[in-house]
Image 1 (cartoon, helix red, strand yellow):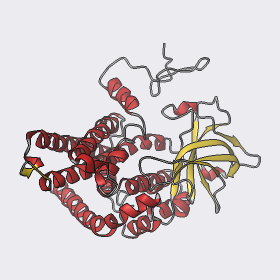
Image 2: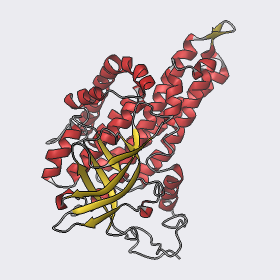
Image 3: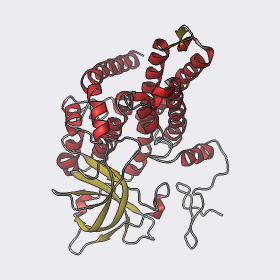
Image 4: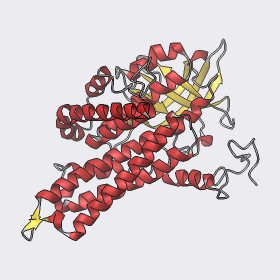
Length: 402
């Protein structure tokens, strides 16, 4: 009991110190960076120097606060600035953890540590134009190269921080687009050996660069494969839905804070609009939903740290929290009336960023299928399917879907 109380006290202290830092040092930079559509990387570097980016890594490599620590970090970042939370999650936390969990000391020391310190943007490149929720549709291929190692050929879409990345982790089919096995390969270089083929003009998370990249005969050595001996590294990716949950909770909390302040200060008919039943009910409902979303996300993080790496907890939390964030941010925008559409108010930015949640990192419909299967509904392993391909249930001993 004392250990649990100590952990809770440490987490509360971490949240308090981080919140003060973000409010004083980061919040004043948000508006200009969003208008410029450019995130100053020195902000991420400073977070790394202070140890915030590695707070969830094991004690010998970081703060030792586990997935719960990462949850608090991303939530607090998103409460102030969604673009920063997205950049930290995608280009620091996930690549660093994948390098560490690969079991390769060399990959961790040469690359993972740099991401955990915020020294260089990193990128995770799995999605393709025709392979979003369906990773089995990947056509990027890793072919065995003469003399050892691999050659990567293909295109990747929606790569966060891909334009400035110092290294990237690429998902590719082994030998053929029709293969079942997908490998994770670390690609690095100065300049990067991939080519930026398209820059996306995002409506949400405007300060983060999101690009498509092309890989043409990119050579990596055999040691650059992250998942070759540690197959559970793929399972660890399910845990990143907990970070997506945290981002959604932070955006919702930021919008709720803004809506509550505005409703307390804005007067109509001689009194604050927050005293009117319609407004107070919107904000009260929002507070209840944000608290519930945070509780689901934190429980998923606690369970993950305790060794429960099943998909249900993270998927359930992400499904609920990302859709809560859309509702809460839109309510807060509505509370602001016409001002909710003005760029000088943060609430519009929260609403734009929240709309990415039900789509990014696994769409809500896929999360719902995972939850439905877990509660016993007769859900097949994959929706749809493609003619001429064997359809099998993951984790079911290769049993065919009939």
